[in-house]
Length: 179
Image 1 (cartoon, rainbow, N blue to C red):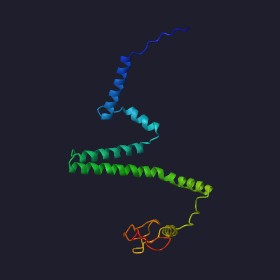
Image 2 (cartoon, one colour):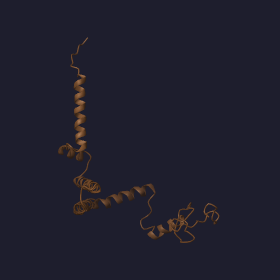
Image 3 (cartoon, helix red, strand yellow):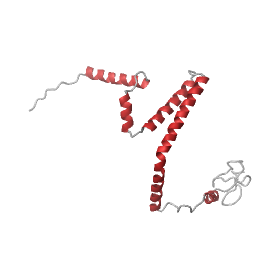
């Protein structure tokens, strides 16, 4: 029989360790103690977030915080206007830069998507349907209102634009519920 001599962790030490961990978590979540910079960078790399996406997230978060502070009355109107303009301009610049970086990949993505759909027999040949043809197909499925000619859903009882009673598709008459 083998005897192991190990030191059991006392309940007091375990409890103190748990309390210390919870206290550190509460301080971090409340903003009292900031997260280490290394941890935030590690999380960004771990999840595959690039620098622009991280910058966009920071700017949008700052905008949200600014709006909250303004709503609570902590920031006056003039300061809010100047700061929000700066943050919005920065967010626009970051999003434009993201679009520029993704632009070369769009053609590749569209080509891959077309090939995939063609393999499945789902894709229509390019140029087969024009925008006018798609609109006609849409209006065929949506009967027009007798009063204003607005296309509505086939099962609509009333027109979504003018509120007139729609005619029943099967009988061509307005139903009692539609009158």
